[in-house]
Amino acid sequence: MASAALAEQQGRRRNFVTARALAALSLPVLWAGSLVGWDMQHHLLFGAMALALPLAWATHLWILRRQDEDNTGLFSGSRHVATAWTLLLSVGVEAGGWLEMWLPAQDLWRWLAWIMVWLVAGIVLQRALADDRDEWPWSAQRDRYEGYVLRPVAALLLLSVAALQLAHDGGSALRYLPLASVLDVVSLAALLWLARGRSQRPLLLPLQRPLTGAVGLLWVSALAARSVHHLAGVAWSAEAMFQSTLLQAALSLTWTLTALGLMIHATRSGARTLWFAGFALLAAVGVKLLMVDLASAGTVEWTASLLGIGALILIASYVAPVPPATDPEGATP
Image (cartoon, rainbow, N blue to C red; front, side, top):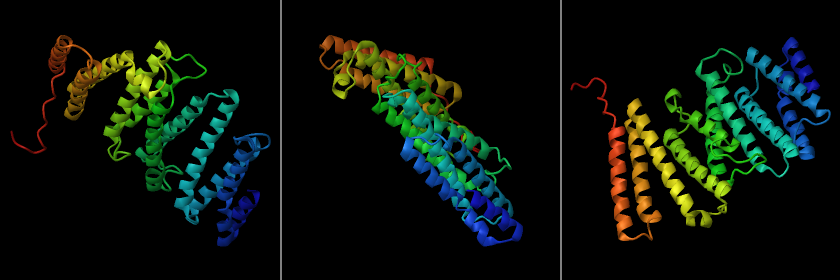
């Protein structure tokens, strides 16, 4: 890295293009040093690397910025994207390595570390790019940061949250408390950021709002499953969960509350699509009650439940009526 810094300094002073091109090798040096550190200790900042690696990063960024200022950077756009991803992966690996040392056999925290890396990176990048800040490095390669860093980060965040709901029961070194557990807090924070689609122009992902809503429903369902697992002792397996009458009741209640919340929010905000999504979820609860929860019930119980579902839908429509359709711009009534 010192050699790269010297090549950059002398290349700029003497207008020596070849020397400045050689200085761009600072990025592969970062890769090599980080890979060696990960292979030896499964994290990066150990021993002398705690001093050497930050100095190497400072040198690399200094070289990149100077070459951007002179518009002489070799493959400048690709180097910006590669630098951003190298930094993100380095932070995630380092956080996971320390968590593995502090909390052995607690893999949940390493999952959450990666989710927090994607979430914080997404928030920082979105604000930096949306505000049209004339600051380096955002001003140098704005389109590349949006297309090759911010959008993939949002996709990884959504996929990580969805995978975690299916792969982990929420057990950790802390006692599991529904909605107050670290898994639920981090998942909810990620979903709330992704759900702010109206303020994101353009949207970060294709079908961002429907996908976020689907993962949100998955989180709500997994929340119910984790609750009965930890609080009622139901085994964390697909077969045990499906056969648990307690979980089926908890799912019905949770989905009903979610549907009513969506419909009320949609009525107040005038979002017809969101209202119909909540209504569809409420209808799905009714189908689930008839086909799953009451599959072995008698005719009287089945009929009473059917009437109760109809009454629930009527109450929901009264409390949260469908928002009025907005006229197209310029249309006359």
